[in-house]
Image (tube, rainbow, N blue to C red):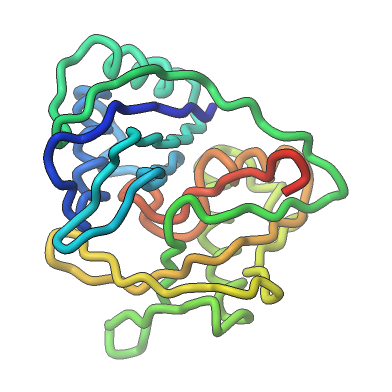
Length: 229
């Protein structure tokens, strides 16, 4: 299940490090839950509609935020919490919440836009990790597939893994690298569309749970194409 939250304009400048604050808001709405120590079968996008200025972001016309959750029971708890629990996010208030209908899954593949940067990391022999970006397409595809396979296994859908492939869209003219600060830890991630080939079921799964690592902390949210885009 995927849904979109619309917020009123902010009254305080939103810092560039806000994605981790959204993660806190997500868990505030859920309340006590088992998700903290589990593989993230959900994805958090970034706020849309902002204007950058020195020191942060402004949302003079309000903002919208997409959240994808694989388990319906968790999604229902989340919606209940966001409608009933008070919250404060830089002066923003909830204007409306509505479900996002999945697109028509056609042609055996879907090109997703990145609703938040895609984080991919490779483990090194010295126990460190290297960030893998869109400009290393083969390595990126392997890591995206590995992470998705783990999530499919967690969801009891292991059989779908062998039928699926993922890759960055190498024809995209303006890919970007974002350095994202999460509690003082800086991660390099890619803003680039991702092409997913496979059954409709797995593409809808990706649409909900995202691509790559730390999707529950504001990375790898996938936006489905609309009106042929």
